[in-house]
Length: 482
Image (cartoon, rainbow, N blue to C red; front, side, top):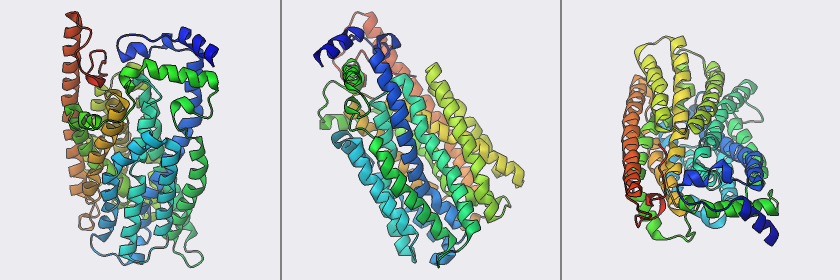
């Protein structure tokens, strides 16, 4: 091991300066490049499948709604909306604890517990007979899915550099889009199959998807390493290369890997983090309403329940393609704010169309515009937050903090499309459009703030300063990605 370490240190000597310089390809050893390729091969597919299964279990209630769930459970008024809303209380409260647990105990152990919990809750939904039972299952589902999204983004941030995270985080959101397509396909199949063995078709939707989560999810979690430096699929040379990489990127990850409560304060009182949370909150009101009620919205255009389920499939596939394409371009050109502003435009246009016309074809086309812009915005935005928060423990608080505030949007988004507004749901679509407009202003404020911080650091460096006495992303050597 000593000779391996010596050769790697010669290949990848630590550098001084910004994170971007420390992460330049010129400093990467061949061992490090091979290690990162292995993470792409082994880790990313496991993350994609895990998130896909979780999102299937979360959003399938929207598919079940339009072919019998409300009638079977005897729901009245806005009780379905309440069931959707009550997914979020524990989902909101437990974001930060789940991610800190991943940092403390390792991804494989923590996410395995999460997977077992949300599988049980999904299967339980298939056997609910009352309103109260459905609420109980949704509360449990929210509690065990709470940390999945921020935890996977945090894991990505501990392995890849600032300029490479966008397309990896895109994998997480591609999984959510693909899950929508799969959910529509499975819903179509169960609806065509009808009632079987004394169980209604909508119940089989939960049973099938819960079984998939339990079987495939448990198998895939074996691919999750405890840490980047101890991944089971790396050889000794590659593990040492990742350890040296962690040393080089100390300004981004933090030299002190011991949790301190000061990191919590650094995160939640940073104006950048707070404004980011508010911005993503407003954007996500539209996203969460869309993800839960897309089949309902499409049915409101004048399509049948069966058509509404399978018509969601191409919409989600289109969204997945756009996510991958834009994330690649954002990483390639190293521009976050520019792409974020561009992405909001299709969503605003899509909602304007469905508010302004009752034409079913125009409304369906508008759903493609919304899918392409909204999910991709979240990808680039979360990559932007991850890029600009250091050290790791501050980031392990900041990411779930942003998502905790963001997830409060579910309390609003799940109430946007209420029965009395059917079939066009003008109010829900108009509110969603307004939220997208507000999100643009949030991006502009963040861009101004980060550019100002970079200018202040550049001025100090020009004056000959080598330190400003601050740590983490506030340190003189850290450059914010715009």
